[in-house]
Image (spheres, rainbow, N blue to C red):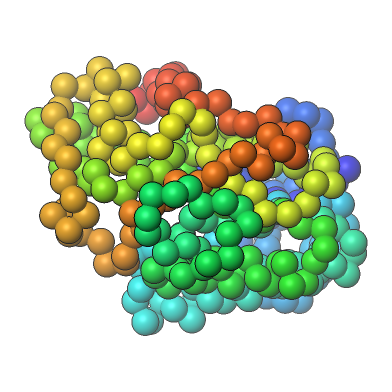
Length: 300
């Protein structure tokens, strides 16, 4: 099998490439930054350039594409000046890839988000829920990307994730580690509920998926229960041995976000087991492994 992965300068794309390499699967990492990478093969790819997409997929002719590239600056997406670029990347770029996959008969995984829902209530969202109502521009763009894939291909996986953290990039855990070491108290929201997703664990699942034909919509975060960002921060400090005190506050009290955030990011992952996939480990275990990896690299 040959696999092409987009967005390999980001947390998830990078770890997907490492997972493919560990299994001996022929893969190429495609990114608009391009450049040499000592860990895996790379190619320059601008997903918003239809001709560039078609040429790379026709030249490399992968059996599958794992699409991790995206505009992910949620607050930045609210700026009217950025919105054409958000649409171009998350919607048009995704459609370009889906159409090129269809042309060569490749299957595709599209990484989406809990932000496609309105984030209300307390009931976990199921993969096949259709009552979409994104609260912000980013969420709408990811929903439109989902639809571009589903309306173009038959052989696709749409995988919604939440609260992502990994070694290759910025994330909530790294931010809290930095803040906790310089502040005696940290204010963190406690009314947004979800579950973290560790990129090496997710990468393993995505490769399992691409080797199968169990197509459809899925939700994938780590196991371990639903928590608030404040709960997550407390566990980060506990495991990292940081004495800073966590002050739980409401989203309204915190008041720093430009884009509206969902209160309910609970994702029902039972479909993974039903399809025969191995669920991700607990987020507590994932956090422990992540902190250990950061320490080994001198980052924690």
